[in-house]
Each structure stands twice: as C-alpha cells, then as structure tokens.
Length: 172
Figure (cartoon, rainbow, N blue to C red):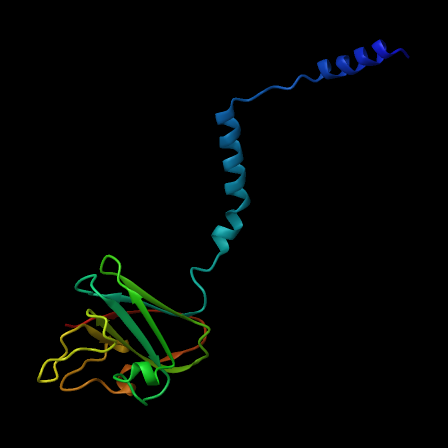
C-alpha cells in the first residue's frame, strides 16, 4: 500500500462520519444541565446543617458592636460571668441587624444560653446606676429577667446531640 493510498483511506474514513458542530451556547447549556443533574442527589439529600445548636438572634436594634452567645452547662457563673464560666462563647459582628450562633460538636446534655448585644464592644452587658441593662440581652427558653437575671433552670434546655434550631429575642 502506497503512502498516497494510505492517506486517502484515512481521509475517506473521516468523511464517512462527519462531525456536527453545535453552537457554543448550546454546548454550554448542555454542560450546565449535565452538571446540575449530576449534583442533584447531593442537593436533595443534604442535611440542612451540621448537628449542633443553631441560634438565630432576633430583635437586634442596630448593627453597632457585636453579639455574644454564651452556652453554659451548669449554673456556675450563669449568665453574668460568660467569659469565665461558659462552656462555649461565640462573639460576632452584626450584619444588617442579624446574627446567628452555631455551636457544633456539643455533647448531649442540659444547657442554658445567654446572649448580649455588646454595642460598645467592651465585653460586658452595660447597666445604668439602678442595674437595669442598657444593651440588649436574651436567654434560651425565652426566660425573663424581672428584678435580676433568670436562673439556669429557667433558661435550661435538653440537647440530644442532634440538630437543634432555636431563636432568642433580645430585650432592651
């Protein structure tokens, strides 16, 4: 077989199966659809969030300062000594008067939560000369503070180690 015959046979074989070119937009759309369907099981069967205690903070009056969420596992230091006594403390900047605390890898047990809106970022809940808070505060179980902070028992809740979503409204 001569070289020219070999070249012709290769060219002839490509002519038998001509390739049709799709417009670039059609190819991109097809690829996007394929990727979306390939990830569909992950999207449909995904858990909404990791196991833990997830707290949405409501009624924040402004975006100034930070929000501190303190998780206590005993009455010791609840709620005023959160920096020294809390099991976990999360402090975050407020964005658009919204905040969320996510405590992950928390073992099952009984807990209570205290939240403060630290507007001047001094690490404590500011009070007036009568002891009335000047910054926002809130507790789990919507425990109320009348003449003093609520007890650990009033704010306590059981956590089973799974996913727990709660909301805490701030009082000013």
